[in-house]
Length: 203
Image 1 (cartoon, rainbow, N blue to C red):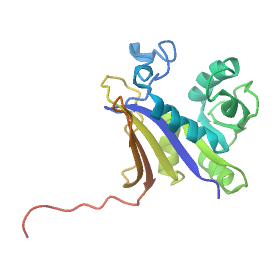
Image 2: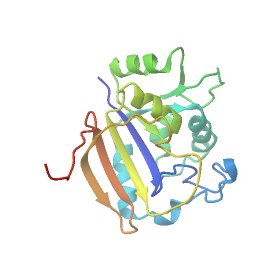
Image 3: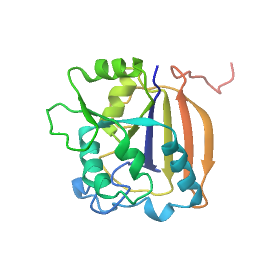
Image 4: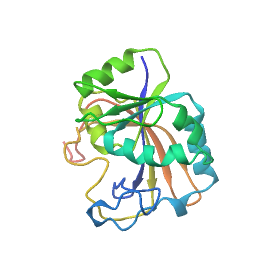
């Protein structure tokens, strides 16, 4: 069984829109594109380098695929470019887009069924990077094995948040944590079943 991991950069209020640059995604009038850049330090480089050093394929929603495909094939000298360009990219889309980035495969039919079948195949781990809508589908069908969340000490406002309306309530177990010199909290979590509630009120 292939593990499926979601890896996301988030602001403190849960926004995952355009962390890499001003022109990445200004939909909704978003004015803070590139908000993650000034928080980068050696530890963040090590975290991302470690994630990229393990063999992986990508699982991407259409919007994230288009953003990646417009940049990474033309940025071959950037850190992380080679493993991203070499990976097989499995794309979830309601349409039938032309996938011009090398090693790209469209998941046809029901997305959840296609991804579940993909997980049963032999191959490296599957990584999703910042596909907000797709993550909702993965959670709803119990397909995620791990969350790697980099939470940056930055507050903004955006309609595009990682865990928005429709997120399935669920418990997570922290399995690893790191903190950068700039205050980024990198948490690795695994699903831990249903939420268990209690009360501090005296019995």
